[in-house]
Every structure is written in C-alpha cells, then in structure tokens.
Image (cartoon, rainbow, N blue to C red; front, side, top):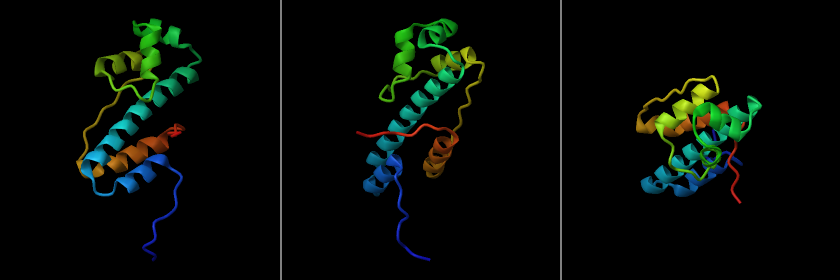
Length: 122
C-alpha cells in the first residue's frame, strides 16, 4: 500500500491538509465548514419545500433578512433557538450531538456527504 495521499478536489480536505498539525487553524477551518454546512442545509430545505425566504420567515416568526443571514455561509451567529424555529417551520426537527474531538472531522465529512452542498472558494 502506498503512503501517497489520494487526490481530492474537496476544498475542506485540501485546507485541512494545508493546516497540518496547527490545532488553531484546523479548528477555524472546521468551524467555518460547519457554518457553511448549516447555511447550505437551510437553503436546501427551504428550496425543497418550494418556499421563499419571506415565506420561511413568516412560518418561523422572523424576518426575511434573518433568513438571508442564516443562508449566508459566512454568518456565525446561529442560535439554537432560531435553528429549532427554522426546523419546525420546515416540518423538521433539529438534532445536535456532542462527539469526541478526534471524531469531529470524520463526523463533518459524514455530514457533508449527506448533502449536496459543496463549499466553493474563490
């Protein structure tokens, strides 16, 4: 078996490889990946329900600009209560889990594989 790393076009994998053993940089990448995943997931669920941001806002008891922020991959202000309201408005339930730090990157990869969302870096 070769020690050569397999090629990938996955932006997160590439960034994690570049980060090497720098724990602060790896954590930052993982946190940003989670923010992007949440934003993408809300967008996917909303569009699958065939509703606008305004309609989702009304169902969740908030405003359209709040939904737009939640669908922005750079947004870092996700509150658990708002995510629960969004889930309920979309007929879903929110599931949160705590995992060992060593498992975190594997879990993030699983979550990314569950969805069509892919990060695009300019």
